[in-house]
Amino acid sequence: MGNQLAALCAALGIVAACKAGSRDARQQGGAVAPAIAPDASAVTAANPPPPPMPTSAPPPPMPTSAPPPPMPTSAPSPALPELITEALYRAPGGGAQARLPSAELLGAGWTRQLRHDGGVAVIQLAYRAGGQRAQVELRFPPHQAAAIPARALAEASAAVVAKQIPGAAIVGGQALPLPGGDAWGVALATTAAGAAVTLGVVAVTDGGDAVIVTTMAHAALFDAPAVKPVLDALFAGLQVGRKVARAPSLTPPTPLTGVFIRIGPALGEVHLVAFDPRGWALDERDAGAIDVDAAYAIRGGALARYQVVGDVVQVTYPAGARDDFQRNGPDLTLDGRSYCHAAATDGLTLAGRWASSSFTASTNVVGETFTASASSSYTFTRDGRYADASTASATLSQPVAPGDPARPTTTAGASADDGPGTYRIRGDRLWLTRGGATRAVPFYLRACGSDPQAMLIIDGALYLRDD
Image 1 (cartoon, rainbow, N blue to C red):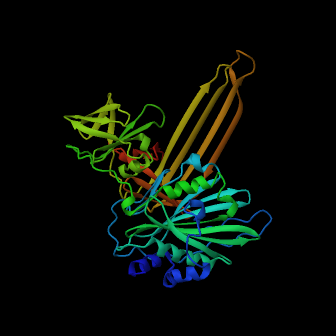
Image 2: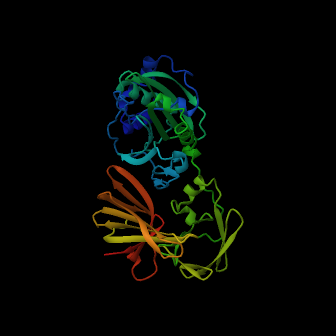
Image 3: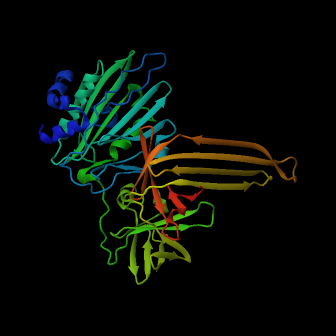
């Protein structure tokens, strides 16, 4: 399989399987031939466990692997930083990414989590339907200096699954027509308490980059309307190596770079505009990804463009509308409203508490008034720890009789405090880790004023110092 595949297998903790190679896969499952169909439901694979069928013993546990070693020294310096938004995950270096299913597609039954097993980033999605579950895991190993064959990687990974799960047998394997890279899938099957369990492994590679997708679930779930469209979307959204979407350069005569922030008159109102030296502009619709390459992939290239004419920055949106920003020293002005340039944040540590609040009220034609308020806070320490908390309340006021003033009749409230975690700030991202799970949110400071840390913009919301 070559030294590079061996190094990748070491990073994934499957050295023994790689040594055995496809020989083990064929021994356990017969001919690795077109015994599986080339759709997502037929190449689903293994890692976290589906729970028991109702009144039955649980299926066997998903296979585990040893923690991978640090990224090989042969890997190049990361070209793009790691990024996760609601719509996209990009691996460190930018050699692989996945468009993630929308919240509407996932519905209420799915959960999502990002974690890091040493140098391997892992995204796990889980679905529960009564006593049945489906789980999907995407693993993004470190870049390798030489090309990795998809078939060898998939067969080696499938051999691990077959050895670690009692009764699991390889059904077959074949190349898959996925748009995001060279792909090979291996299907496996087993039973648990008399119920069929479907497993599989799909490796998608291009050059020295790879994504390994494993799934395991009760077989009846894979064609369920809540599951199969999610699997189809995941496989269709994988991009590896040269297939990763990148925003091209528009070669503007006067390139700009940076994020600009406007604080609006409403409580917590924040507006953003960002410029990329390649000629692209982003606004608050991209608050979850002020990153041109990510936004380009998410929105299929439908981004705003800019050009500088004298002291005016002309931003033209995909639908044809245009905004003219006036340059005002380091800042911008649009229709008399000032946009302050963002301060540098990479590597920043914080100390103190910041809070954000919102309030809304409405009255209908019969005099009923609905009010709602919400607040959240973050507390940071210089040693990289944080805690957050949130509260929400709502009140419905109704008149006792027509024409009477409204009086509170129904009040509801909720609060949450999920405990401490750790944080780090890389570029314009605040990375928060708690309980082994990690999330990243956009993070900005305004450079205006005497104290840039008087207010923080976290995930598009305004937080004021409160200590």
